[in-house]
Image 1 (cartoon, rainbow, N blue to C red):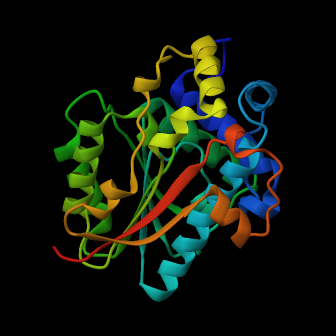
Image 2 (tube, rainbow, N blue to C red; image 1 turned 135 degrees about the vertical axis):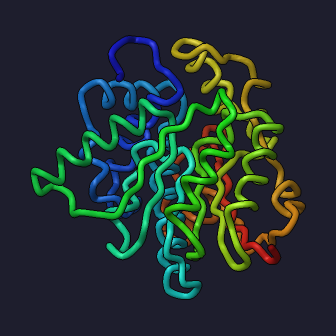
Length: 280
């Protein structure tokens, strides 16, 4: 991983971790530094220079928002299981109460590497033990039936929080619809979904044009149409769910007293949503 000058989409997990480690007070992730390596730091620095220097803080606040909302729902909503779709190298299991069960889902190569490193760090007493089920999924093949069975064997009837961040941007609408239909099958009344996505107006910004140029150099997708944006109405219209919270980078910056230094035009403004299932 990170072995060449070509950046695969899943390898952005290293870069995201490097961003979260930059401002631990803001991200709340005091284990993100474990993923740091010279290659990841080089990619991160190049990304900040060529795309947006604000990206460090957008990733920190995304992590902080979902971390706090998961904690809040553990207390007030009795959440017992966190199911992380496209988990990457996020470190939520070690930032939450040890009683929480974690199901981490991603591509097989990501899951295998993460499992190996976590076990290594636990053996070195750098990380505490946690109840984590790692599930590698080849999303290019039919995966729903097998994944549902795996999740059900772990989750049972326990209340769950499904998290999907840093994923929808790279999917098309049909794939996104299919995922939310899957979430509906997994969850029961009162369960929560946390989702991160960008809105249509992102594609008009200079930051997005810079992102396209960067991806043009580093990855295969280079057209604006290759990346999905999602309007608020999509979340409001998901059958069986109620939209209970919506934030973005600017509102979270106010909440967490973060001073924004860049102009809006130079920021990839991500939006964050909480949905609660209202009927089974």
